[in-house]
Amino acid sequence: MQHDNFNYKKRVSSRRILAYEEDKTNQFLLKRVLMKNGYEADVVNNASEVLNRLTTHNERYDLLIINICAPLKDDLELVRTIRSLSNQHISSIPVLATCTAIHPDIKKMCQAQGIVDVIMKPFDIEKLLKLVEESIGGSNTNLIFMHSTDPVS
Image (cartoon, rainbow, N blue to C red; front, side, top):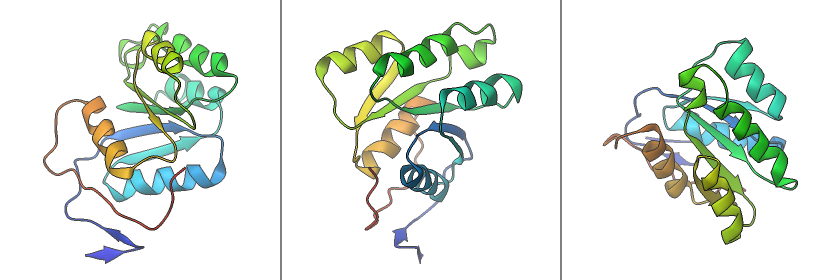
């Protein structure tokens, strides 16, 4: 079945992902990739919205994807804040980070804050989806790899 330049086979079981990305184009593309692969995806554009979704709305997510950028300390502070929350599910949510440049020190700092992995932008969609599934836990044989002419950066 082909639709919107994407080839898909089977949908994965529904898992909820919250993505934090400032760039509107990247928000659209990230949400599209995740949803086309069977994930429920919400995208927000600042740290306050992330905390609001996780705490005020009491929404349950299986994964958080954040774009880390300068100043890096602000994005790492968001992760520290999430890790310090009293709700066990929220404080232990797996976090993946996207970044335009990965220096070994950045990756170490991220991992020290409990970020599962950092993927460089523009990222390979197959690698992103593999990291998403690994981060959520367990392998899913229904995982779809999409190929598109759309760049995801």
